[in-house]
Length: 116
Length: 113
Image (tube, rainbow over all chains, first blue to last red; front, side):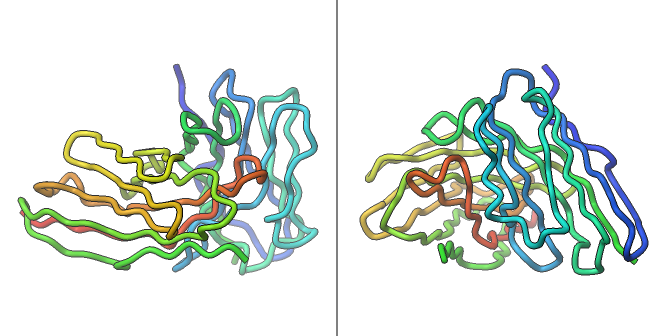
């Protein structure tokens, strides 16, 4: 089957604009994660969804960032009033369940966001 | 703050060399340790998910060990090949934190023919 897909693959925007990044997880995966990698930094956790539970938003860097997951499948990460420090590669991942030995995370190809 | 450290930051080896990297993580509240391989222009790909102290896992020429009591994991590559060139990431999952992974900065491996 298809892997995790993300769109767009690249996004260039002007400072102050809002952007939406989309993630389609692997069908049947109940857990969905967003990470980002800024230049010179490691992968940073942003937010995590597990089934119908309240999402873990502990990694969101500011209240300009929000995410939702509709119908337990597709997720959208929204960044309002983008700033230059938001420029990064945003990665989405999904897994069958959260945690556990067999629950490796499957990553999408990422969205490269550039804020001018 | 949970800290995951990887060393070395980068490594350049010749084809055929064997090599190893280190990942250190908090020894308390341990749940799982993941290793991923991230090639340029591709998605990170899981190599191993390890949960038991003393566990050793192997996939082809790549193997990993885990010591949860002292908080470290080693990744070994035997007989490196140019196609092994990638960034190798380890990620720590704490108990009762759901699936949240805390990643290290990665070790960038370059294998020259």
